[in-house]
Amino acid sequence: MASTSCSSFISRAFIILLVHLSSSSNNLAAKHTYPASHHYRHHYRSPFPNPKLQQAYNALQAWKRVIYSDPYNFTSNWVGPGVCNYKGVYCAAPPYDKKLKVVAGIDLNGADIAGFLPDELGLLSDLALIHLNSNRFCGILPQTLANLSLLFELDLSNNRFVGPFPYVVLSLPSLRYLDLRYNEFEGPLPPQLFSKNLDAIFVNNNRFSNVIPSNFIGSSASVVVFANNKLGGCLPPSISNFANTLEELLLINTSLSGCLPPEIGYLYKLKVLDVSNNNLVGPIPYSVAGLAHLEQLNLAHNMMSGIVPMGVCILPNLENFTFSYNFFCEEEGICQNLTSHGIAFDDRRNCLPEKPMQRSQKECQAALEHPVDCFHYHCGGGGSGGVLGRSTAIPPAMIPAATPLLSPSMAPGYV
Image (cartoon, rainbow, N blue to C red):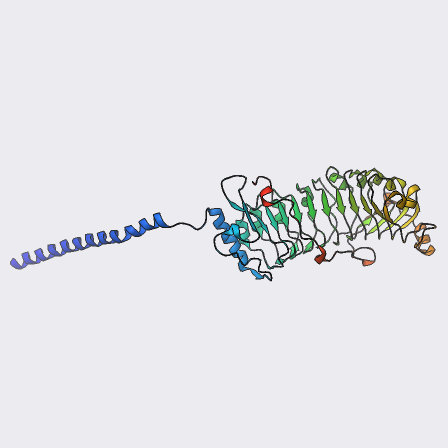
């Protein structure tokens, strides 16, 4: 009996001891963990003024990791959390919060950097401007650029981007300036490009092919440059849908064929029209005489024929009229002596009687015997780069670094 009582006492004592040790352990743990939690809540500070700049830091550091050559050390100060002090990075308040500071612009023009664009650039959702002219960026554009809903200007010119037309740019609702020239993009141009609310479209000096889209729905563009691509086909009559805005149209060396449509004369704001180095035939449309703002007209290196109409030569703002290397056989009125009217011109290698440096009689006779009826002329497909394969491409080294249309702080909504 005593043995049983003793055993029961020991058991109760052991249980009490366990409870005491457990309570002591919990109190000790609480004493040790509380200060750490307290310290975290009251003493830790993020090095970034706001989460947007932390995202920008993550994006720019990811970009820096895929830059493989930076000969001028342009990104050497892309270190630490102060992204607004990075060279080529510009911060401003976004339109939705004037008290917030975000990365609003990136300008790496002329840095000669080699690398590619990582997916993380999609984190820079407040960008208004991206200018990467004259670098060695390559590859394709990341689809995450679709996150850049405030992007106003995108200049990727004079790089080494490849692939089909980057459809991701068509999803950018605020985009007004698009410069893709001097890259290696290829394939057809999407018709949707010309229905976007863009002010400037530069797609020249790529590998775009197929034909110029035939259904221009309407565009706000004032400048469109197709030059030095292998597009082919005719200039469609729907070009007239650019009438309210278009001031410069450059189609140099695009393998255009057929006749110039009379609808070209509907572009009443046009100042520059250059269709040189193509396969155009037929006469100059009389409607061109209605382009009162036209300053430069270049029809050189085609197979056009007929009369050079006086209505074109007396255009009030005409400064330069080039129609050399065609088969024109007559100049009306003052067209015979444009120099006396202060207009620079070039009429060499045509079939103009009594003018120097013209084609041979044999060449001209062949053209006269086969006049072109533009009403019944059918367009050809793509070509090999202009008459006799000539190309007038400007060397990339001669491209001026793109000057931003706006500074980041002047983009719509930014202050």
